[in-house]
Image (cartoon, rainbow, N blue to C red; front, side):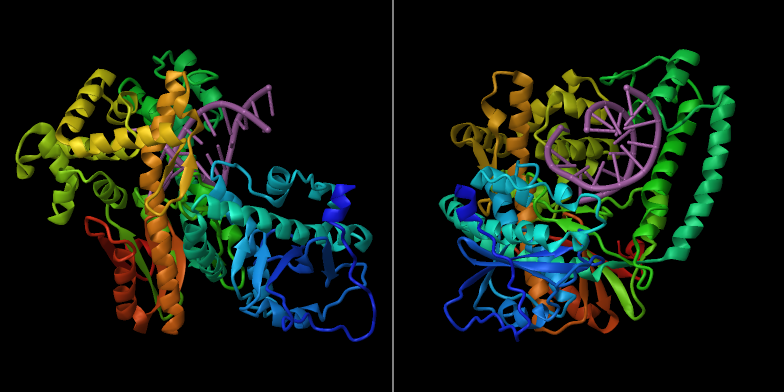
Length: 597
DNA sequence: CTATTCAGC
DNA sequence: CGCTGAATAGT
């Protein structure tokens, strides 16, 4: 059986005689390993064993905390030398998890990191799931036994008997080794090696440090906000039931639609797949006809903030340190951005007063301040660079308000005569350009007729020929080669670009337009993160990087390091890439995230 | 599990 | 109009 020769697992010898430390003095250049744990949280769960694989066909599993042994708890001491040996490259699938787990055992994993999960992501960022199961299936045609089946009714992997645990776990390290042999030559072939080794691989350790650091939250403040919101929501609920003349579940779009459009007889606007829409813009329209929609809007906003942030964040805080530790996923987005989950700290409210109050609950430790640094107009600057559009280049080179300048072109008047509304239109259009702009989308965003939006777009391209040419060239490239790339060569295939269905094809063209811009911005801030992280280490600073929010970095800065940090952060962020226009970073600091903005 | 809605960049 | 993750209702 082919599978048996490929993944012939050998159980760890269970001898009592003094085990030999795994030696790196012979010819060991690479070691594949995989940590098994009681769960998936690298800061909370415990290691139960480690699988190892040095060569094709031989893999081992070392149990350390299984409920039915035998265990080899000395394994950490024995393996430390090789895991910390920088001359031995480490191979694994999702190494951020393994390195974070091992750090808690006092082991700092060193050496080149061949992460097969990240490799799979670079090869195909459209792939929805880069789990070992999925990647093994795609590249090795290997069907892994489902983890849940192995787990059965047991509480954790620690309770799985070794007879089952050994072959299952050992296979993970073996799979990683096999995948490395396949995926890394493919990265080379695709011209993605430099992106991997210079950016994604060093980023693994940066993200591990950010996640381990976490960010402190003010629990009493959030508790107070919760009480205040509870009263507010009770009042709004009473008002809604009174005005509606009945009680119903305000959070049910279906029940709300019945009240608005059947019982009260208001005129429905947009439709969804299942019925009439009750989304913000619909309710804002309806607010002209009736007083209920405004109450609903208020209720919705406050309920969202309370349930998603104010009541949820405290549950995820470490009870001892009051810090929350998000998970930054490196292999989720199709464009190269990071994503954040459990909790998502990349969508903490900011726009409203309540948003400011919530950000006020993200605080610095005693003797520290939070420093926020964000790129100004990063994607538009990248568009200026990639398109060479004279107007955009000029605006950024001469620190002219870019939206006002677009408005002046669009409405044919001097920059200083542009009205607030004209600037708002121009700003929406500038965003639209980055998003691949359709007349329909722009009309929705500006609440104008699609025909009127089409005229704006026509006028925009007439006054921005460089941008027009860039978009045409990018779409043509997508058609010709089937994918688009960022400045650093990150690729995204766009299979629908040749579709005969116009809606599908145009959606693909918007993706083709947006991906190089969004993706290059992602590349750029990743470079800045790595360089700043390196500076923090080499200068032995006590400051911690604590969050990344796409174009913003947040630091918890020791007060006496504030000056030097601001210099370092500005230098590394603004110097991350040399573009045809300068990069601009805005910074602010304070006791909490609200003050830092 | 899917749809809707909405928080962010 | 691009890219996400979470809460909620309801099947």
